[in-house]
Length: 366
Ligand code: SF4
Picture 1 (cartoon, rainbow, N blue to C red):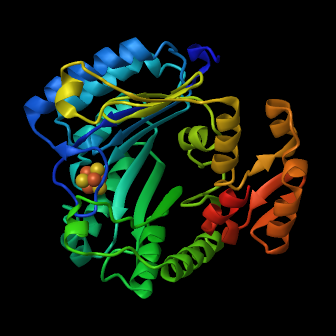
Picture 2: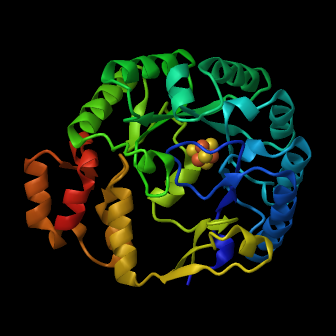
C-alpha cells in the first residue's frame, strides 16, 4: 500500500453558491454565512485528520463556488490550507466572475494561489440569464483583467456545449469571445441533464451525439489553430499549462479529497465523502468506499489514461502491471487503429480525436 505521504495532490470542496444554476448536479447549496462558518470548522478538522503530507505539489479548491465565501471566510480557508502549500507548484481556486472581487484576488495572491478556473459557461448574456447564472460576459472580462493586473496569469475558462437555444454558430462565437481573452487553458463540457435539476424538470434534453461531436470537432479545430493542444477529452491548453492537478486523476495517481462529497484515492481505497451537509458539519462523515484490486487498478489505468493525449505507455504499463497491454488486446487494438480511433506511436497507445469522442466503445472492447 502506498504511503499517504507519497500523495502530492489535494482536492478541497467548497459547496456554497450564490445561486443555483438550472443544470447543476454538483454537491452544492445556497450560501449562508452561518452554514459556511460551521462548514469551515468541519473542513479544517478533516484536513488535519486526512492530509499528512505538508509538501503537496498541487492543490485544487473547487465547488460549488469557493469565491462565494465572504472575504473573512475565504481568508480563513486559505490560511488553513497554507501549511500544506509550502512546496506547491500549482494552486488552483475555482471562481465565478461575479464573486471574484479584487479583495479575493488579493487574498489569492497573498496565499500563493497561482491558477484560477472561471465558470464562464456561455458568453451570451441572454443565455446566461436563461440558465440562472448571475454574471455577464463583461464580468468575465473584468475578472480576467483583474487577475492579470494582480499577477495571476494562469487562467482557465470553462464553457458548456449543448445548452438549450445555443446553435453551433453561437457556440463558435463563444469560443471566439473566449479566445479574445487569451486564457492559458480552456475546458468545454457537453451538457448532461441530471435528475432533480431544473433542466430535467423542464424537460430539457442533452445535445444529440452528432451535434456534440460536430461541436467538439469545430472547437478543437479552432483551438488547435490558436495554439492550444487537446490534451484531454474536454480540455485544451497552451504548452506547459495543462492542469497538473487534474492530470493526477487522469494518470490514475493518488490524491486526497476533503470536504462535502469530495472524492479521494489513498492506498488501495477510493472514497467519496458524505453528501449530507448536516452530517458533514456534525463530523459524521460516512464515506462510500471502494477497495481497488490490482485488476481494478489496471482497468482504471486504461480508462483514465486513454482520456489524455499521453495515452498508455506500454513500457510503463508493463513495469507497473507485469503484462504487455498491446499483446493482451492485440486484436482489438489493431481493429481500433485501423478504424482510426487509436494510434500506436513510439510505444504508446493513444486515442485519436475521434477515439476520445467514442471512449465508451473502446472501453467496452478492451
Ligand atoms: S455555480 Fe457551479 S456549482 Fe454552483 S450551482 Fe452553478 S454550476 Fe453548480
